[in-house]
Length: 103
Image 1 (cartoon, rainbow, N blue to C red):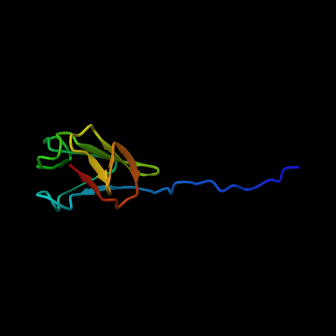
Image 2 (cartoon, rainbow, N blue to C red; image 1 turned 60 degrees about the vertical axis):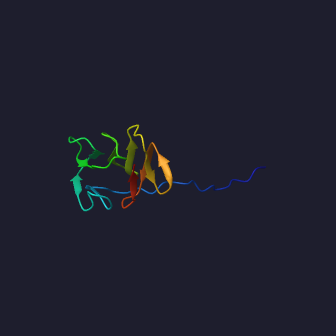
Image 3 (tube, rainbow, N blue to C red; image 1 turned 90 degrees about the vertical axis):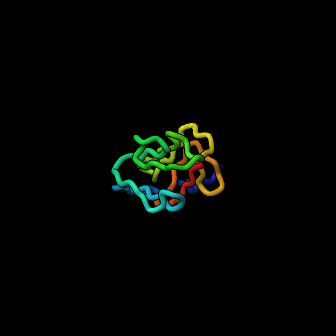
């Protein structure tokens, strides 16, 4: 006879994000920010919501959007990458307050 066991399931924390605020904390654009409720595009091209004039940032470098699990960071095939900590990411779900480095 087999005994029934309760196996805990790992779950990701859920974050309720009502407003998305992206703030530049280093470089020439430090202090600039963008506030929205859905998504922020980041890059060196003028039609991004956050424009970074840095030679290591691609024209349409990355995007940050709101998801039920937190914030979704997507790299758009940039040359120099998008990093969460020391890890280069193509797509990552991160909690609010996470520092993301471009270039």
